Amino acid sequence: MIPAQLPANVALLLDFDGTLVDIAARPDLAVVAPALTERLHRLYQRTDGALALISGRHVSSLRHFLPDFPGVIAGSHGAELSLDAQTLETFHGLDIDPAALSQEAKELAAPHPSILIEDKPLGVAMHYRADPSLQSFVEEAMQTMLARHPGMALQPAKMALELHPAGFGKDGAVARVMSLPAFAGRVPVYAGDDLMDEPAMAEVQKRGGFGIKIGPGDSIARYRMDDPVALAAWLDAWLAASVAG
Image (cartoon, rainbow, N blue to C red; front, side, top):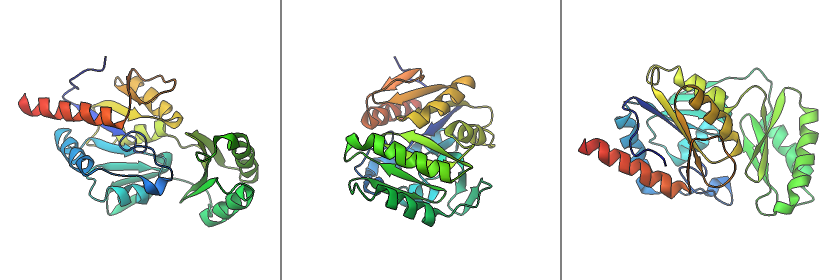
């Protein structure tokens, strides 16, 4: 059973889609409840600033949905790092043309209009959520793109495949975030729902913290919760107990 209390020196590292918000039919249709914004501000205060979002989304997308988020954002699987709304570091050594990648993906996916192409500043993703029978087609199409673009890597996700710079992952994002002054020496706790979150959970558990798997599926996480609603309730209970204590 997941503990009701967290270490006094906890650092919270949270995925976005499927963890803080429900998975939407399209990434741009994610719904952020008003209570989430308030909860994140309270968590930021409670952890003395050791709060981060770690996502496959790019930073600008996350700031669109959470414009007042006060913590650190690691986007694009750690290839982007934003300490505040004014600064953005991008870590990659590739000459990436995201518009060309998007056009190439759209041409490959043209026989199946139900496939969603998600543009990213450092890559592109193909989603087959609208028609799961297209998984093999998407996998072959993305393998074709991978062969054409050395230095890139494929990342499986829920009903999707993403092409992004090789050498980046959420485990590296965790390591980078934990090296920041606000996080140094703290016990990391990571919550995520997807395959790409597993390396991050391994990283925090290696560092003496623990992972929380949101939703179904195999996981190395020490704990599990059913959905974002359950995670929100647990975080609210911890905040309330912290105030009472």
